[in-house]
Amino acid sequence: MNTKIRRFIYHLRYRYPTREVITVTLVAVAIMWFIWGSVQAMQKNYELRKVVEDKARTAELTDLETKTLEYEQRYLQSEEYKKLAVRERLGYGDPGEKVLVLPANSSDVADSAVSGLAQPAESPKPSNISQWGNFLFGGNVRGE
Image 1 (tube, rainbow, N blue to C red):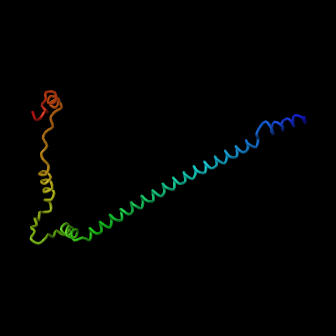
Image 2: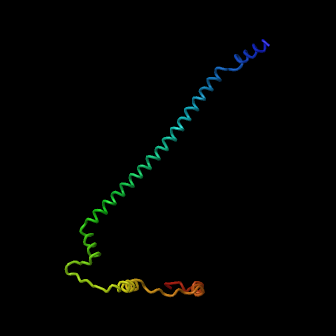
Image 3: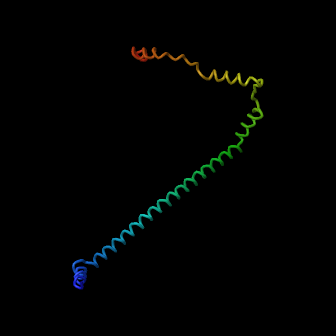
């Protein structure tokens, strides 16, 4: 038994480079640890960059909303808006302007008359058979 143990120790000592294997293993573990840390740092940087971009986008949106509201506020304080509001709400006009006053129920008639004049009359749509006939016999060709 003593011989077997001595032989095993001999094999470990002289046949297998134990120190080199341990050194290579430790170096491999250190490299893997470094790579894992780098990947985690890159992932954290990516997530933080997304957060920063989201906050920048939100800040830009808020800035645009603020500018829009400031523009709207300046418009509401302008003389042009005041004149339009007075014309619309109170019915006042500019000096020398003629105003046509209609009865209360005439607005519906006037709207329908104006909409009827603004849109041209629609021609009746040809039937499917006549459309095919025009297509097959060249009735849709223009300019010949």
